[in-house]
Length: 489
Image: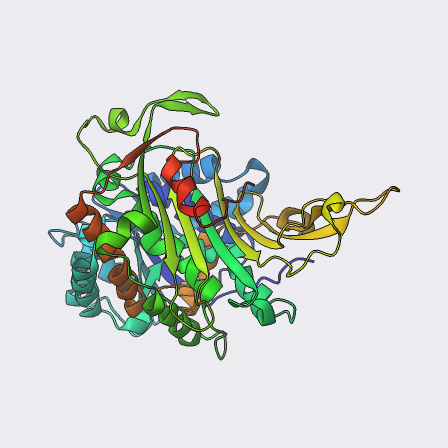
Protein backbone atom coordinates (compact mmCIF):
# COMPACT_ATOMS: atom_id res chain seq x y z
CA UNK A 1 0.00 0.00 0.00
CA UNK A 2 1.33 3.44 -0.89
CA UNK A 3 0.36 6.76 0.66
CA UNK A 4 -1.92 9.14 -1.19
CA UNK A 5 -0.27 12.30 -2.47
CA UNK A 6 -2.41 15.36 -1.76
CA UNK A 7 -1.40 18.46 -3.76
CA UNK A 8 -0.84 21.69 -1.85
CA UNK A 9 -2.00 25.14 -2.86
CA UNK A 10 0.40 27.24 -4.98
CA UNK A 11 3.18 28.82 -2.92
CA UNK A 12 6.38 30.84 -3.17
CA UNK A 13 9.39 29.23 -1.47
CA UNK A 14 12.35 31.54 -0.85
CA UNK A 15 15.62 29.92 0.25
CA UNK A 16 18.00 32.35 1.94
CA UNK A 17 21.34 30.59 1.58
CA UNK A 18 20.06 29.13 -1.66
CA UNK A 19 23.56 28.15 -2.85
CA UNK A 20 24.67 26.74 0.51
CA UNK A 21 25.25 23.21 1.73
CA UNK A 22 21.80 22.66 3.26
CA UNK A 23 20.07 23.86 0.10
CA UNK A 24 22.28 21.63 -2.05
CA UNK A 25 22.05 18.44 0.00
CA UNK A 26 18.54 18.60 1.44
CA UNK A 27 16.18 21.38 0.38
CA UNK A 28 16.47 21.29 -3.42
CA UNK A 29 16.40 17.46 -3.57
CA UNK A 30 13.39 17.43 -1.22
CA UNK A 31 11.51 19.94 -3.34
CA UNK A 32 12.36 18.00 -6.50
CA UNK A 33 10.87 14.83 -5.00
CA UNK A 34 7.65 16.69 -4.22
CA UNK A 35 7.61 17.90 -7.84
CA UNK A 36 8.16 14.34 -9.04
CA UNK A 37 5.22 13.14 -6.94
CA UNK A 38 3.01 15.87 -8.45
CA UNK A 39 2.38 17.61 -5.13
CA UNK A 40 2.79 21.16 -6.48
CA UNK A 41 -0.05 23.23 -7.90
CA UNK A 42 0.50 26.05 -10.35
CA UNK A 43 2.02 28.60 -10.20
CA UNK A 44 4.40 27.45 -7.42
CA UNK A 45 7.76 29.28 -7.48
CA UNK A 46 11.11 28.51 -5.81
CA UNK A 47 13.49 31.44 -5.37
CA UNK A 48 17.13 31.12 -4.35
CA UNK A 49 18.65 34.04 -2.47
CA UNK A 50 22.25 34.60 -1.38
CA UNK A 51 25.08 37.13 -1.72
CA UNK A 52 26.52 35.39 -4.81
CA UNK A 53 26.04 37.24 -8.07
CA UNK A 54 24.25 34.58 -10.12
CA UNK A 55 21.71 34.55 -12.90
CA UNK A 56 18.58 32.40 -12.98
CA UNK A 57 20.42 30.08 -15.37
CA UNK A 58 23.37 29.77 -12.97
CA UNK A 59 21.05 28.84 -10.11
CA UNK A 60 19.22 26.28 -12.21
CA UNK A 61 22.54 24.69 -13.14
CA UNK A 62 23.49 24.59 -9.46
CA UNK A 63 20.15 22.97 -8.61
CA UNK A 64 20.47 20.42 -11.42
CA UNK A 65 23.92 19.35 -10.19
CA UNK A 66 22.66 19.17 -6.60
CA UNK A 67 19.73 16.94 -7.54
CA UNK A 68 21.85 14.64 -9.71
CA UNK A 69 24.37 14.34 -6.87
CA UNK A 70 21.92 13.77 -4.01
CA UNK A 71 18.95 12.00 -5.60
CA UNK A 72 19.10 8.35 -6.60
CA UNK A 73 19.63 7.94 -10.34
CA UNK A 74 16.50 5.80 -10.53
CA UNK A 75 14.46 8.75 -9.22
CA UNK A 76 15.67 11.21 -11.86
CA UNK A 77 12.96 11.80 -14.44
CA UNK A 78 14.19 14.29 -17.00
CA UNK A 79 10.75 15.68 -17.72
CA UNK A 80 9.96 16.33 -14.06
CA UNK A 81 13.46 17.66 -13.45
CA UNK A 82 13.06 20.19 -16.26
CA UNK A 83 9.63 21.23 -14.96
CA UNK A 84 11.17 21.66 -11.52
CA UNK A 85 14.07 23.74 -12.83
CA UNK A 86 11.63 25.98 -14.69
CA UNK A 87 10.13 26.95 -11.31
CA UNK A 88 13.49 28.28 -10.10
CA UNK A 89 14.73 31.85 -10.15
CA UNK A 90 17.44 33.69 -8.24
CA UNK A 91 17.94 37.03 -6.51
CA UNK A 92 21.20 38.31 -5.07
CA UNK A 93 20.51 39.53 -1.53
CA UNK A 94 22.87 40.81 1.15
CA UNK A 95 21.16 40.24 4.48
CA UNK A 96 23.45 42.65 6.32
CA UNK A 97 23.10 45.66 4.04
CA UNK A 98 19.57 44.91 2.93
CA UNK A 99 20.49 45.09 -0.75
CA UNK A 100 18.18 42.96 -2.88
CA UNK A 101 15.07 42.90 -0.66
CA UNK A 102 13.33 45.44 -2.89
CA UNK A 103 13.93 43.18 -5.89
CA UNK A 104 12.49 40.23 -3.95
CA UNK A 105 9.40 42.31 -3.16
CA UNK A 106 8.97 43.12 -6.84
CA UNK A 107 9.29 39.45 -7.83
CA UNK A 108 6.77 38.28 -5.22
CA UNK A 109 4.38 41.05 -6.18
CA UNK A 110 0.89 41.24 -4.71
CA UNK A 111 0.25 37.50 -4.74
CA UNK A 112 -1.84 36.18 -1.84
CA UNK A 113 -0.19 32.74 -2.10
CA UNK A 114 1.71 31.23 0.83
CA UNK A 115 5.19 32.74 1.21
CA UNK A 116 7.70 30.45 2.91
CA UNK A 117 11.02 32.03 3.82
CA UNK A 118 13.57 29.32 4.65
CA UNK A 119 16.63 30.65 6.50
CA UNK A 120 19.35 28.17 5.50
CA UNK A 121 21.97 30.61 6.79
CA UNK A 122 24.09 31.17 9.89
CA UNK A 123 21.93 31.72 13.02
CA UNK A 124 23.51 35.16 13.46
CA UNK A 125 21.51 36.27 10.40
CA UNK A 126 18.09 34.98 11.51
CA UNK A 127 17.05 38.15 13.29
CA UNK A 128 18.41 40.50 10.62
CA UNK A 129 16.59 38.73 7.81
CA UNK A 130 13.31 38.58 9.74
CA UNK A 131 13.43 42.30 10.45
CA UNK A 132 14.36 43.23 6.88
CA UNK A 133 11.48 41.14 5.55
CA UNK A 134 9.21 43.15 7.85
CA UNK A 135 10.77 46.53 7.04
CA UNK A 136 10.47 45.91 3.29
CA UNK A 137 6.79 44.97 3.50
CA UNK A 138 7.35 41.34 2.49
CA UNK A 139 5.35 39.73 5.29
CA UNK A 140 1.72 38.89 4.58
CA UNK A 141 -0.78 36.95 6.64
CA UNK A 142 0.11 33.93 4.48
CA UNK A 143 3.84 34.22 5.19
CA UNK A 144 5.86 31.71 7.19
CA UNK A 145 9.51 31.77 8.31
CA UNK A 146 11.50 28.56 8.82
CA UNK A 147 14.58 28.59 11.05
CA UNK A 148 17.06 25.79 11.66
CA UNK A 149 18.73 24.95 14.94
CA UNK A 150 20.46 26.19 16.93
CA UNK A 151 17.93 28.61 18.38
CA UNK A 152 20.45 30.40 20.60
CA UNK A 153 23.30 28.87 22.59
CA UNK A 154 21.64 29.24 26.00
CA UNK A 155 18.34 30.40 27.48
CA UNK A 156 19.18 34.10 27.36
CA UNK A 157 20.27 34.11 23.70
CA UNK A 158 17.31 31.92 22.71
CA UNK A 159 14.91 34.41 24.29
CA UNK A 160 16.62 37.30 22.54
CA UNK A 161 16.45 35.57 19.16
CA UNK A 162 12.82 34.57 19.69
CA UNK A 163 12.02 38.17 20.60
CA UNK A 164 13.70 39.46 17.45
CA UNK A 165 11.99 37.02 15.10
CA UNK A 166 8.74 37.48 17.01
CA UNK A 167 8.87 41.24 16.42
CA UNK A 168 8.40 40.55 12.71
CA UNK A 169 6.36 37.32 12.59
CA UNK A 170 3.52 36.00 14.71
CA UNK A 171 4.17 32.76 16.59
CA UNK A 172 1.74 30.98 14.24
CA UNK A 173 4.03 31.99 11.34
CA UNK A 174 7.31 30.76 12.88
CA UNK A 175 8.41 27.20 12.06
CA UNK A 176 11.43 26.09 14.14
CA UNK A 177 12.56 23.00 12.30
CA UNK A 178 14.07 19.85 13.81
CA UNK A 179 14.45 17.37 10.97
CA UNK A 180 14.36 14.43 13.41
CA UNK A 181 10.67 15.11 13.95
CA UNK A 182 10.04 14.57 10.24
CA UNK A 183 11.40 11.04 10.26
CA UNK A 184 8.77 8.39 9.60
CA UNK A 185 9.75 6.27 12.59
CA UNK A 186 9.63 9.22 14.98
CA UNK A 187 6.05 9.95 13.95
CA UNK A 188 5.25 6.29 14.45
CA UNK A 189 5.89 6.76 18.16
CA UNK A 190 2.50 8.45 18.37
CA UNK A 191 0.88 5.70 16.29
CA UNK A 192 2.42 2.92 18.40
CA UNK A 193 1.26 4.50 21.64
CA UNK A 194 -2.10 5.99 20.79
CA UNK A 195 -3.43 3.84 17.94
CA UNK A 196 -2.89 0.50 19.69
CA UNK A 197 -4.53 -0.79 22.86
CA UNK A 198 -1.47 -2.95 23.52
CA UNK A 199 1.15 -0.44 24.68
CA UNK A 200 -0.42 2.58 26.33
CA UNK A 201 -1.74 0.70 29.42
CA UNK A 202 1.85 -0.48 30.02
CA UNK A 203 3.51 2.88 29.24
CA UNK A 204 4.34 3.88 32.81
CA UNK A 205 6.59 3.25 35.80
CA UNK A 206 4.62 0.19 36.88
CA UNK A 207 5.71 -1.72 33.78
CA UNK A 208 8.72 0.06 32.24
CA UNK A 209 12.14 -0.35 33.87
CA UNK A 210 14.03 2.29 31.88
CA UNK A 211 14.35 4.02 28.51
CA UNK A 212 17.47 4.42 26.35
CA UNK A 213 17.85 6.97 23.57
CA UNK A 214 20.97 6.71 21.41
CA UNK A 215 21.99 8.95 18.51
CA UNK A 216 25.41 7.76 17.33
CA UNK A 217 27.46 9.04 14.40
CA UNK A 218 30.59 7.57 12.82
CA UNK A 219 31.66 10.87 11.22
CA UNK A 220 33.89 13.53 12.75
CA UNK A 221 33.81 17.28 12.28
CA UNK A 222 33.48 17.27 8.48
CA UNK A 223 32.72 20.87 7.43
CA UNK A 224 31.30 22.02 10.78
CA UNK A 225 34.57 22.82 12.56
CA UNK A 226 33.89 26.44 13.50
CA UNK A 227 30.31 25.86 14.64
CA UNK A 228 30.86 22.56 16.43
CA UNK A 229 33.76 23.64 18.62
CA UNK A 230 31.63 26.48 19.96
CA UNK A 231 28.58 24.27 20.49
CA UNK A 232 29.60 20.74 21.49
CA UNK A 233 27.41 17.66 21.64
CA UNK A 234 25.20 18.92 24.49
CA UNK A 235 24.04 21.99 22.59
CA UNK A 236 24.20 20.44 19.13
CA UNK A 237 22.27 17.22 19.78
CA UNK A 238 20.81 16.93 23.28
CA UNK A 239 19.07 20.31 23.56
CA UNK A 240 17.00 19.69 20.44
CA UNK A 241 16.99 16.24 18.79
CA UNK A 242 17.29 14.08 21.90
CA UNK A 243 14.98 16.07 24.12
CA UNK A 244 12.35 16.06 21.38
CA UNK A 245 12.59 12.26 21.19
CA UNK A 246 12.34 12.04 24.98
CA UNK A 247 9.21 14.21 24.90
CA UNK A 248 7.51 12.00 22.33
CA UNK A 249 8.23 8.91 24.41
CA UNK A 250 7.20 10.44 27.72
CA UNK A 251 4.32 12.82 26.98
CA UNK A 252 0.75 12.23 28.11
CA UNK A 253 -1.85 11.45 25.44
CA UNK A 254 -2.85 14.76 23.81
CA UNK A 255 -6.52 15.54 23.33
CA UNK A 256 -5.95 15.46 19.56
CA UNK A 257 -3.10 15.62 17.06
CA UNK A 258 -3.58 19.36 16.63
CA UNK A 259 -0.30 21.25 16.85
CA UNK A 260 -0.84 22.98 20.18
CA UNK A 261 -2.41 19.93 21.82
CA UNK A 262 0.72 17.90 21.04
CA UNK A 263 3.14 20.67 21.94
CA UNK A 264 1.36 21.40 25.23
CA UNK A 265 2.07 17.81 26.33
CA UNK A 266 5.70 17.96 25.20
CA UNK A 267 6.15 21.16 27.17
CA UNK A 268 4.89 19.46 30.34
CA UNK A 269 7.59 16.81 29.97
CA UNK A 270 10.35 19.39 29.55
CA UNK A 271 9.16 21.25 32.63
CA UNK A 272 9.03 18.00 34.62
CA UNK A 273 12.66 17.04 33.94
CA UNK A 274 14.63 17.04 37.18
CA UNK A 275 17.38 19.62 37.03
CA UNK A 276 20.98 18.40 37.02
CA UNK A 277 23.33 20.93 38.56
CA UNK A 278 26.16 21.39 41.03
CA UNK A 279 27.48 18.15 42.43
CA UNK A 280 24.86 16.05 40.61
CA UNK A 281 26.46 16.62 37.19
CA UNK A 282 29.45 14.24 37.69
CA UNK A 283 27.06 11.48 38.85
CA UNK A 284 24.48 11.89 36.10
CA UNK A 285 26.50 13.08 33.10
CA UNK A 286 29.58 12.03 31.12
CA UNK A 287 31.55 14.22 28.73
CA UNK A 288 33.84 12.71 26.12
CA UNK A 289 36.11 13.69 23.25
CA UNK A 290 37.38 11.25 20.63
CA UNK A 291 41.06 10.60 20.03
CA UNK A 292 42.69 8.93 17.04
CA UNK A 293 41.34 5.50 16.14
CA UNK A 294 39.75 3.62 13.28
CA UNK A 295 36.50 3.72 11.35
CA UNK A 296 35.02 1.59 8.59
CA UNK A 297 37.06 3.60 6.09
CA UNK A 298 40.37 3.28 7.94
CA UNK A 299 42.44 5.26 10.44
CA UNK A 300 41.03 8.62 11.58
CA UNK A 301 42.47 11.59 13.43
CA UNK A 302 41.46 12.64 16.90
CA UNK A 303 39.21 15.65 17.49
CA UNK A 304 42.06 17.95 18.53
CA UNK A 305 44.07 17.03 15.44
CA UNK A 306 41.08 17.67 13.16
CA UNK A 307 40.46 20.97 14.92
CA UNK A 308 44.09 22.05 15.07
CA UNK A 309 43.65 23.23 18.64
CA UNK A 310 45.22 21.12 21.37
CA UNK A 311 43.52 23.06 24.18
CA UNK A 312 39.87 22.56 23.20
CA UNK A 313 37.67 20.98 25.86
CA UNK A 314 34.59 20.75 23.64
CA UNK A 315 32.72 17.48 24.14
CA UNK A 316 32.02 15.25 21.14
CA UNK A 317 30.16 12.72 23.32
CA UNK A 318 27.54 13.09 26.04
CA UNK A 319 25.76 10.52 28.19
CA UNK A 320 23.08 11.61 30.67
CA UNK A 321 20.87 9.87 33.18
CA UNK A 322 17.68 11.95 33.15
CA UNK A 323 14.61 11.63 35.35
CA UNK A 324 11.09 12.96 34.95
CA UNK A 325 9.35 14.09 38.09
CA UNK A 326 5.73 13.10 37.50
CA UNK A 327 3.42 10.21 38.37
CA UNK A 328 3.77 8.32 35.10
CA UNK A 329 7.58 8.21 35.11
CA UNK A 330 8.59 8.43 38.78
CA UNK A 331 11.64 6.21 39.31
CA UNK A 332 12.16 5.42 35.59
CA UNK A 333 15.58 6.60 34.35
CA UNK A 334 16.00 7.88 30.79
CA UNK A 335 19.54 7.21 29.58
CA UNK A 336 20.63 9.48 26.74
CA UNK A 337 23.86 9.14 24.75
CA UNK A 338 25.13 10.78 21.61
CA UNK A 339 28.52 11.21 20.03
CA UNK A 340 30.74 11.45 16.99
CA UNK A 341 33.21 8.83 15.78
CA UNK A 342 31.33 6.05 17.54
CA UNK A 343 31.29 2.35 16.59
CA UNK A 344 28.34 2.55 14.23
CA UNK A 345 25.78 5.01 12.89
CA UNK A 346 22.51 4.36 14.66
CA UNK A 347 19.62 6.30 16.14
CA UNK A 348 17.20 4.31 18.25
CA UNK A 349 14.90 4.34 21.24
CA UNK A 350 14.81 1.32 23.53
CA UNK A 351 11.90 0.80 25.92
CA UNK A 352 12.88 -1.92 28.40
CA UNK A 353 10.02 -3.37 30.39
CA UNK A 354 10.33 -4.70 33.90
CA UNK A 355 11.30 -8.36 34.35
CA UNK A 356 8.71 -10.98 35.17
CA UNK A 357 7.98 -11.12 38.91
CA UNK A 358 8.69 -14.85 39.21
CA UNK A 359 10.41 -17.39 36.95
CA UNK A 360 8.47 -20.69 36.93
CA UNK A 361 10.78 -22.43 34.44
CA UNK A 362 13.89 -23.08 36.53
CA UNK A 363 17.57 -22.59 35.75
CA UNK A 364 17.69 -25.28 33.05
CA UNK A 365 15.40 -23.19 30.84
CA UNK A 366 17.99 -20.41 30.65
CA UNK A 367 17.84 -16.73 31.44
CA UNK A 368 14.52 -14.93 31.02
CA UNK A 369 15.31 -11.55 29.45
CA UNK A 370 13.12 -8.52 29.99
CA UNK A 371 10.91 -7.56 27.05
CA UNK A 372 12.16 -4.69 24.92
CA UNK A 373 10.58 -2.44 22.33
CA UNK A 374 13.25 -1.07 19.99
CA UNK A 375 12.35 1.79 17.66
CA UNK A 376 15.06 2.27 15.03
CA UNK A 377 15.13 5.76 13.51
CA UNK A 378 18.15 5.23 11.26
CA UNK A 379 19.47 3.36 9.40
CA UNK A 380 17.08 0.54 8.42
CA UNK A 381 14.06 2.21 9.99
CA UNK A 382 11.73 -0.13 11.81
CA UNK A 383 10.32 -1.45 15.07
CA UNK A 384 11.28 -4.60 16.97
CA UNK A 385 9.46 -6.16 19.92
CA UNK A 386 11.67 -8.61 21.79
CA UNK A 387 9.77 -11.42 23.54
CA UNK A 388 10.67 -14.77 25.12
CA UNK A 389 9.73 -18.05 23.41
CA UNK A 390 10.49 -21.74 23.78
CA UNK A 391 13.39 -22.86 21.62
CA UNK A 392 11.87 -25.48 19.26
CA UNK A 393 12.91 -29.09 19.73
CA UNK A 394 12.65 -32.01 22.13
CA UNK A 395 14.47 -32.32 25.40
CA UNK A 396 12.75 -29.95 27.78
CA UNK A 397 11.95 -26.28 28.10
CA UNK A 398 14.66 -23.95 26.79
CA UNK A 399 13.85 -20.27 26.45
CA UNK A 400 15.37 -17.63 24.19
CA UNK A 401 14.48 -14.10 23.09
CA UNK A 402 13.33 -13.40 19.55
CA UNK A 403 12.20 -10.20 17.86
CA UNK A 404 8.95 -9.48 16.12
CA UNK A 405 10.19 -7.20 13.33
CA UNK A 406 8.58 -4.46 11.33
CA UNK A 407 11.03 -3.24 8.69
CA UNK A 408 9.69 -0.16 6.94
CA UNK A 409 11.61 -1.03 3.78
CA UNK A 410 9.95 -4.45 3.63
CA UNK A 411 6.50 -3.51 4.92
CA UNK A 412 6.02 -0.47 2.69
CA UNK A 413 7.04 -0.56 -0.94
CA UNK A 414 8.39 2.45 -2.74
CA UNK A 415 10.66 5.25 -1.64
CA UNK A 416 10.44 6.53 1.92
CA UNK A 417 10.25 10.35 1.72
CA UNK A 418 13.01 12.30 3.43
CA UNK A 419 12.14 14.21 6.60
CA UNK A 420 12.63 17.55 4.87
CA UNK A 421 10.03 16.68 2.24
CA UNK A 422 7.38 16.14 4.89
CA UNK A 423 8.36 19.17 6.94
CA UNK A 424 8.43 21.55 3.96
CA UNK A 425 4.95 20.46 2.92
CA UNK A 426 3.73 20.94 6.50
CA UNK A 427 5.09 24.50 6.39
CA UNK A 428 3.11 25.19 3.22
CA UNK A 429 -0.03 23.73 4.81
CA UNK A 430 0.55 25.76 7.98
CA UNK A 431 0.68 22.63 10.16
CA UNK A 432 3.02 23.29 13.13
CA UNK A 433 2.63 19.91 14.87
CA UNK A 434 6.17 18.76 14.03
CA UNK A 435 7.78 22.12 14.78
CA UNK A 436 8.97 23.53 18.10
CA UNK A 437 7.03 26.27 19.81
CA UNK A 438 8.87 29.11 21.52
CA UNK A 439 8.15 27.90 25.05
CA UNK A 440 9.41 24.41 24.15
CA UNK A 441 12.75 25.78 22.97
CA UNK A 442 13.15 27.88 26.09
CA UNK A 443 12.11 25.05 28.44
CA UNK A 444 14.74 22.81 26.82
CA UNK A 445 17.44 25.42 27.38
CA UNK A 446 16.23 25.86 30.96
CA UNK A 447 17.18 22.20 31.56
CA UNK A 448 20.40 22.24 29.52
CA UNK A 449 21.91 25.44 30.97
CA UNK A 450 22.43 24.08 34.52
CA UNK A 451 24.31 21.07 33.10
CA UNK A 452 26.56 23.29 30.98
CA UNK A 453 27.11 25.64 33.92
CA UNK A 454 27.92 22.76 36.28
CA UNK A 455 30.52 21.42 33.85
CA UNK A 456 32.16 24.84 33.75
CA UNK A 457 31.99 25.54 37.47
CA UNK A 458 33.19 22.05 38.48
CA UNK A 459 35.74 21.92 35.66
CA UNK A 460 34.27 18.50 34.85
CA UNK A 461 36.72 16.32 32.95
CA UNK A 462 36.29 15.67 29.24
CA UNK A 463 37.21 11.99 29.04
CA UNK A 464 38.91 10.71 25.92
CA UNK A 465 37.66 7.73 23.93
CA UNK A 466 39.12 5.98 20.94
CA UNK A 467 37.39 6.71 17.62
CA UNK A 468 35.40 3.66 16.53
CA UNK A 469 34.31 2.67 20.07
CA UNK A 470 31.13 3.41 22.03
CA UNK A 471 32.54 6.33 24.01
CA UNK A 472 34.28 6.74 27.35
CA UNK A 473 34.23 3.86 29.85
CA UNK A 474 32.48 6.21 32.27
CA UNK A 475 29.39 6.13 30.02
CA UNK A 476 29.24 2.35 30.46
CA UNK A 477 29.61 2.79 34.23
CA UNK A 478 26.81 5.39 34.21
CA UNK A 479 24.24 2.75 33.31
CA UNK A 480 25.90 -0.37 34.73
CA UNK A 481 26.06 0.96 38.27
CA UNK A 482 22.26 0.88 38.12
CA UNK A 483 22.39 -2.80 37.13
CA UNK A 484 21.57 -2.10 33.47
CA UNK A 485 23.47 -2.20 30.17
CA UNK A 486 23.37 -0.26 26.91
CA UNK A 487 21.43 -2.01 24.19
CA UNK A 488 23.58 -3.47 21.42
CA UNK A 489 22.03 -3.27 17.97
